Image 1 (cartoon, helix red, strand yellow):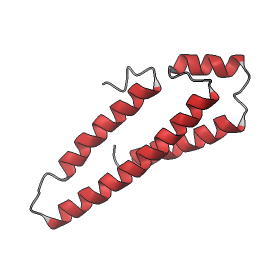
Image 2 (cartoon, helix red, strand yellow):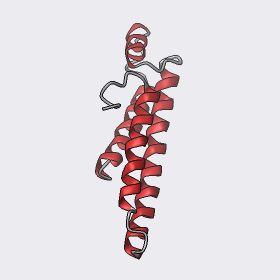
Image 3 (cartoon, helix red, strand yellow):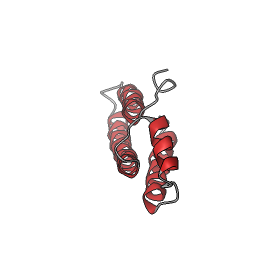
Image 4 (cartoon, one colour):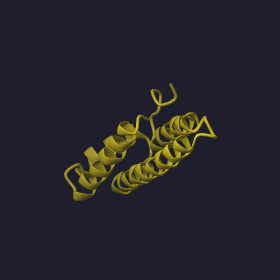
Length: 108
């Protein structure tokens, strides 16, 4: 629910991480099972890697938009400065797609 009302980059990241943290805790619910512990550790490492890729994409988007974190301001800034065809935006979209793709594959 928190993610549906997100209108800035920080809120999107915090909502995704809160949901991921709950998923990590649920996957490691049975502490005495060795396979559960191993799966939880792998899940945590993959989640951390995908989150870092997502944050890297956010940083490219933040830098390319001139320091804006709200989504509407980012879009307006990119349209007004005609930066939407720049290589920085392409790199940001690639990192965002990979980061969100990994989170979706992991089962978010």
